Image (cartoon, rainbow, N blue to C red; front, side):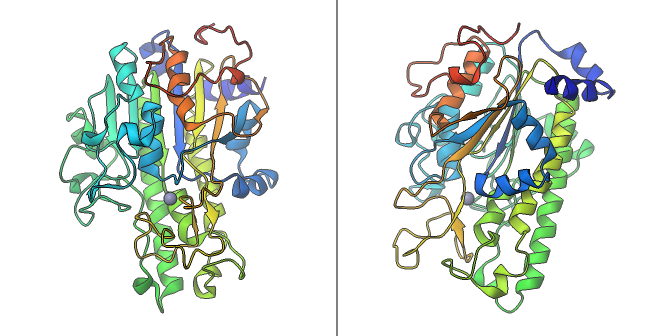
Length: 403
Ligand SMILES: [Zn+2]
């Protein structure tokens, strides 16, 4: 019933007419990636009613933790999501590989969007990490984290604008780039780089506020981009990713004075900065849900969670890996000791169980690609290590969700 409520709401809006003309009879899958989505932070916000759109998806779907790979970071996990193979197999083991920023030329296994494209499924992707330079698809692709450009030469954790991209294409097909420049504007492709310790020293409050307002600018641009693409370039499979949540959590996680890395000058300025990222994300979800109809699956997939630093971090030689650079980091996900940082998974759509919680870590990042392929009736290729998440569907014997 609740799903119907969403549909009715959406049905009142004019843009939906665009879809009914251009959509095939295939199911639509709208996958929303949120980097470092952390249930510990989401739960109190959900209880306070501050995430109405996320709550709606959870109540109408199946939700839980998503087991990730060891020492997870975005390129490492995203490439596993792409291929359902181990990092050592797909080749993207981290941000840097042999000193070079991870890029799509290094991807050694076939991503599932290529398989979808070959089978005639239309694919649209925007701001998905580790997709630079973009690869051809049966649709469009706008790259995300690890895009290189002016003032962001190595592409690691910085934010080039579309016009500033260097060293490869950030948009496929090429003709889409001028269109986006004119219709959406010159947007930032990735989230803002975290400030360094030197930059912060003595200017903490000012730097934090400036950084957070830039993050909001970037999120607003992304919302506009997603809205434009969903409205004017609808595809069967669509994947859009936000990465500012994780970035904020790394250095502004709400921690107590006894936590490792606590610095009153930073930690007391905006203690709600990280939770507020999810409140802002919820608004983005609201905008995206305008494009959801009764034939659409909504998947929210997070590559990993994020937790405050634990004991011994200051002396651990693996404590601060390539992710954080010089930022005073107080939370992370690539704990060298295998500490628990699972991601999250929420699915809603035709034939998906409602208000069902997945217990334990039964679902993993390896399972996303096979499950998406399955929805389109495509057998996952042999190299894929994951499985179809049968338990999220009302009937195990479902075929493609088109009924
Ligand atoms: Zn991170």
